[in-house]
Length: 157
Image 1 (cartoon, helix red, strand yellow):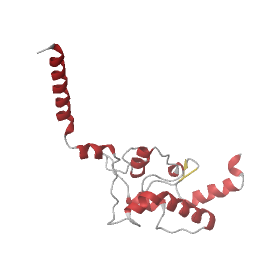
Image 2 (cartoon, helix red, strand yellow):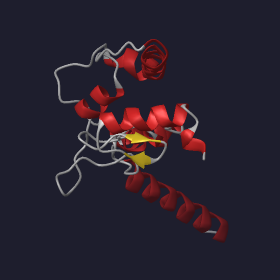
Image 3 (cartoon, helix red, strand yellow):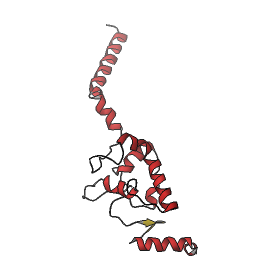
């Protein structure tokens, strides 16, 4: 056997060994690259899952506009409702915040490299105090007072 044949044979054996070692379940390997999406608490979402995956941002924006501009508050597309239903528990048994990669919203948004700015003002886990401008507020009454103060120009002093 020539040295070239020996090198080629060793190379082919190496390729085969690498192939056998990594082939495994290709589908499982591909699934592990996708985000881990936690299932909501209910039997089904407010709309079909595929629709919600593609359009949730538009629904939330529309809900925000109706609430802020027109004062219309419905529960079907409320961020609070989404957070309550899709809360993911951490190792301590409490819901994780959006800073945790297991958070329902963060799992997909991190995967897609999309910034989540909802939780700059809103609570990212159920039962957490509401926020306004980075300040945690204890009640809606204080939230309204803080907003009125801000809109009245008193918040910019």
